[in-house]
Image (cartoon, rainbow, N blue to C red; front, side, top):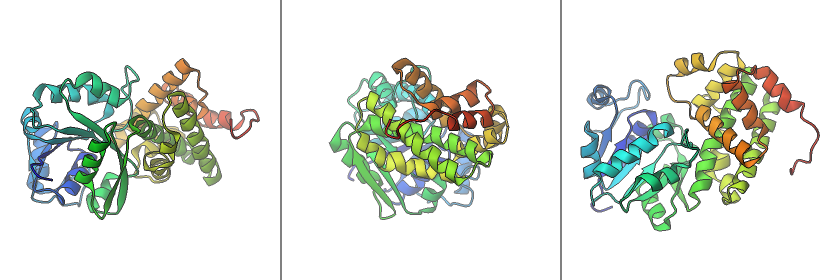
Length: 335
């Protein structure tokens, strides 16, 4: 794309992986990280040794330690920070955005913790300039994207023209992008997949087996659909990459930190102990609280989400939570 200047905000695993991918398609990529010393080490060593050890960064990824400068010079910003920091980041972007900034694509999943709002709602509140927004979501481990392994994702925006524009920024023979205008549906899928990954991890940490895991995932998808119907999203979105696709990935592979968090809970470890061992934000922990609270408010029955919430926030034993799910009364599967 002509006159494209891409800035990536966030030098963790996902931000680094997306930078590596984008560097194959664009002249240079500006990368910002909260820890300037760590950022300089990544660029100097051509490697993010903490999160993507062994994967070399191309020479056209450049460190940009000053966030205001990165924002001011970018035509497109890729935001790869935890969802709990999105409002403050969007506020900062709004302060320093120039007329050059055409769009923001965030690659984080979840809701705002304190308000329960969707990230696109937070963006609507914080961005006073005429800036396009989109979300990138789908089954995509940073490690595999960094290695250049085949991946497919969804890019959703309420503006279909910008969804196509954003998709073109990323599209590559080994990184296929699909578009959607159902941004809320894509966001719900990205949040639910982390809750269900924790649930699947709990199941496997208890050694309850593959049959139970398959049932758990299937009934979890039913919960996601029930939740989505109440919020009037397009249910077909859930059978796509950002829904079932991401659920399959994160519930079944130990590269998922949400699944590993659940494994630890199933093994009887405390949330604090597991969090310290993993050393990264567990988005599903926050999503479980937001979705549980919304379900209570809207009177939606989400038994799996409720049990995940109880294990994390009410110190309920993981075994008791799974047994309570299994002992629920008979019902029609379609309910």
